[in-house]
Length: 352
Image (cartoon, rainbow, N blue to C red; front, side, top):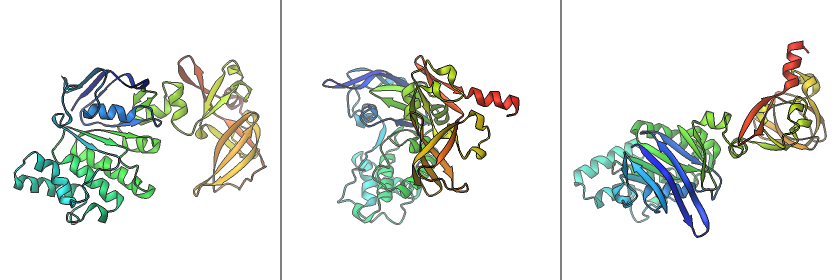
């Protein structure tokens, strides 16, 4: 299903949940709506589903305006955050519910439910009730029930929010693979950046009721269109007065810049590739993260997060540390621009 949204607006009293949002979604794409809580993601999803009516704007499915159509006539499947399974029905009957309402033949219902039990890895569990299932299994039942009527569009509201971290990661891979096998256009809401980056074909960053940026995960991460996206995506820190950092004197007139941990090389002076392009700081806190150390470093008036591999010598709170920032996002007009450490390039040419 090809989707076009034009100038979609929705308010709740004085709160603007969707502020003239426009976008299009190609058939078969898996789209993640990513953004902070209260940004308008779920409102957009519910308007696509017909559960909320926009104040203005148009929603088109395959070229047809569907604003006036009720949810049951939009050919969609919807998986709610709490799954909304019927507790008094077993797995089989939960999946079959929508088909029974649509008065499918009993033989067709049975065929479709059996197909979905296999597809979702639930075969053998069809007689169990929701309270006899794990969180991951309940999520799969909800997914199967939404797919049962063969919808053209699947909508998922925070599909993994109620599942523990380990199972959540397994289900991400499962969901992506399953949706690709089915070939259905899918939109899911999440506030989890890792989840969006890992699962989605394209991401839409929603904030304050506005669409900040839409694109492939790599483009969203490495080429942010707005200061908000640069700051929101990744483990970013906002720096005041970037011109005081070595290698960035040309940017002393820029009020703010953004740095991410992967932009930083840090350690003892002898460990750095180009120490002449580094500033001296002090470690103010350390945190063991299993596969690496997380260091909080005070660098002049700036506080930075730095990751250090376990293979390197342990550094402790209070130790001095040398920090070379390879690049920054600086605010240049409405869009952030990536700038490189000038001293690093200069010293590389001189062989220092």
